[in-house]
Image (cartoon, rainbow, N blue to C red):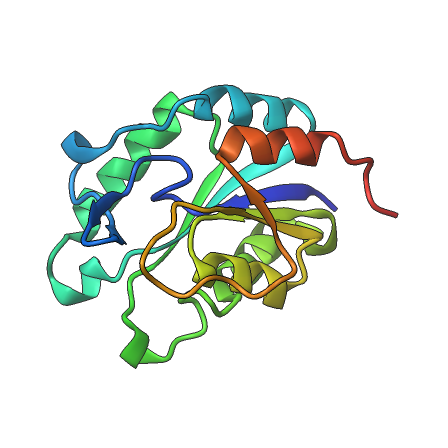
Length: 179
């Protein structure tokens, strides 16, 4: 089985658009700003044998604020520029009560099945409580929380707070494989 690092997109790979203390997704490729050191961190994780899998909620698709084609274009361009292996997207809103919207672990389970990933040997990096809880529910070895101080609930422990993806990658790469 393979190992992976499950990555939230907005706030981990690219900068979120923050309004009134709350993060929002960029709606077009032109709004995407890849965060510093992301490429280097992803390359190092891939070289160490990890798949880099983006797991992202994109409810703006359901609400009509964004189109599926604009999300697809963003992902196509990110994959061309960065060492990313796959994207798994939940287009739903909370009211849909689906299994794929984080904090539910559905997207991680889909990725694990498709790529033969051992979730217990894998990690999650996110910037919102929903991300961390999805990693915990799925059974990831650890979850890393990029804490921007958003005006929303904080995740429940256990998690490790980090400044960015680069810091999470250093911690992941310093750990021996789990037995």
